[in-house]
Image (cartoon, rainbow, N blue to C red; front, side):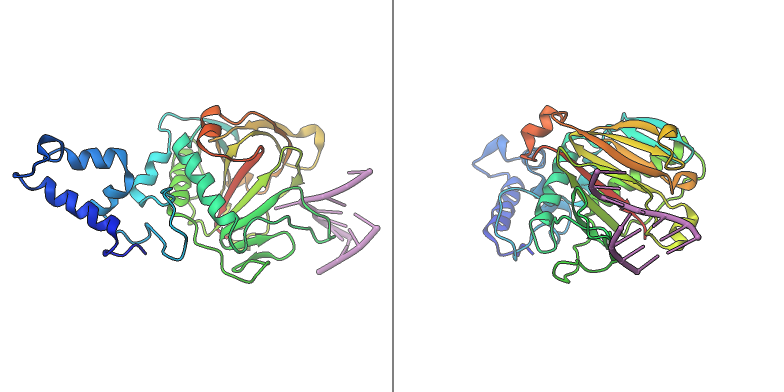
Length: 299
DNA sequence: GAGTCGCA
DNA sequence: CATA
């Protein structure tokens, strides 16, 4: 936690007290609109002004000048309001460009911080011992192809960190939008966020997500899948029949939701489209070539 | 015997 | 096929 005694906190308090003093030698710059200026140029002072500072910083980590934590209210700025929805099947909808570039950057930052820590990205194996073609890690309840859902990481037995508030707010709002477009799509309280990174040559064979609780599957609680980085060719269908599969492009910022009657669809990623990352995202973060996916669920 | 988040 |  950032302590009230830190020099950073004190300096903000000083600015606040100056702004309320009419005898300030800073004149118009500090008086009146200074807090609005701070709020505009730096999210952290906004937190100090109106919201408790807890959760904003973490003394166990090395100090970083990158603001990786934003207060819950500000995470709403991650969302584009004018997105379009494409209903792909009953219970399955693609929200195009739902996450804006600020949000995509925040997601990359959060996943990077998680991914290099204990229990971070690793290449999982299936039950036959074959390596899967992606790196994974989890927020909240952990998932692995062999063990299924678990409250601890396989690698070191540690507990994964909670799902960031922003991820939850983002997908809850996306599910609300989806519910406005279609019937019989339940809401969820996400407790698991599988983070996958697909390098350019990786692919994902056709499969169903059915490791969740019987209750969750029975109710058709939706999966919310967020795409970041290079786009992917996503294939899906009722069965494994290759001739009856649908195909859709998932681009950076898109959120795909499948629940209700589509909860158990077969799906997979046939290829990653190298070089299709939005230029402004590529400029904002140094993500490697490939596709980052968040899959949020309620176990 | 069903089914495979893999491979070929 | 190897596995549960």
